Image (tube, rainbow, N blue to C red; front, side, top):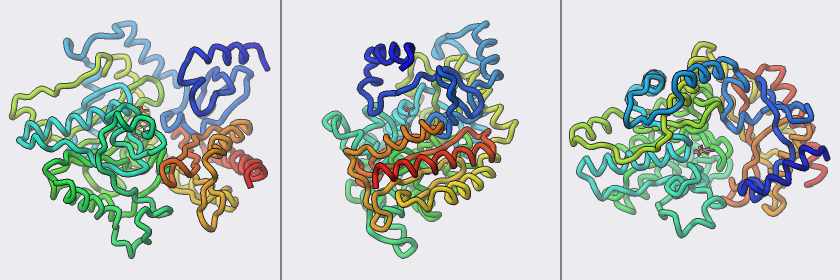
Length: 455
Ligand SMILES: Cc1ncc(COP(=O)(O)O)c(C=O)c1O
């Protein structure tokens, strides 16, 4: 083993989440360029995971670095509560331009989890100011993932990530996910009459609409459901149910926002306007920690009418260097037509992925949209039986794929929150058709090795 790697592995003990994480990293990342990451031995990895789901414009873009440097030469930090912040104002304006027309204000923060915490608190305070102080519950879906902080984890339906923290979490109601491959209501589309959407109406009636503040959902699924795409009727029905009960619809676009699925926001595929959108990964391109909650005009109007200030905020939120980085990333996405590219290339990406991988006996399903794909790994394709979770099959598959030079994101819990292995791929939007071919060749090869070990 090279000296530097050995030394780094010893020092990894100083980073709690690294040494006590699900997968101890085996290589040191040295640098990135375009769609590639390189380790210290000079080996090249195609970043088919895009981070996961973060790297939109590619690694190492000098335009972002130069813009951040210019801002740092002027000033790196001042507190948003004391000073107006020009890069942040420009960023808010740009985000609102590309958002659904009812969303007219941004609240910034530093991570996806914080954005969902923020949205939950905006919704709660909106109802308090609006004369409905009992409304507080946040309904969500089993197998969803909205973040690791306690409010966001309370809203998350990912059992494996919740179990050890359950006593600390709000036990808010959850409905089944609209995942047709493993329908939680044991029905089949379209005969099901969208039972998974009607479940929201039922649960709101059961707990009492006067107590329900918001419904939160990922427009297209992330880690928990591996890029589940609900049927066309789903979100229009959800919107109608939320309106009927004065429940706000929070659309978690932490993964899907800023072009990942071939539209600026995933929810646009359904033509539905949420009350709050949260987003983070793609708008930063990975150049800075930053996230946003984008808020409906009517919510702002209620705060204004009541002369209320939002009781919330983070010291580092919207700092001018991070704002400059995001502004430059969004500029590049816009000027280079990367949202359209994601839609166009997405067609090729799914065609190629299905051609190369779906014949494998362990590939149960391939789903997603744009440049966001979930591959479900099963022990038995006919019965959809998952692998024994103690085998950590998805993690093992990631290791094999990395050895071949291809990065992806292993996740678990799609079957019952604990069991079920999936592998997500979501490359930078600048990837070429040739690079897509190369990545699927590596994954095809990796699946062959995986099958020798697991079947
Ligand atoms: C859909 C979704 N929401 C929220 C989060 C939490 O974001 P963060 O890790 O930036 O806190 C994630 C992270 O992967 C996510 O995929």
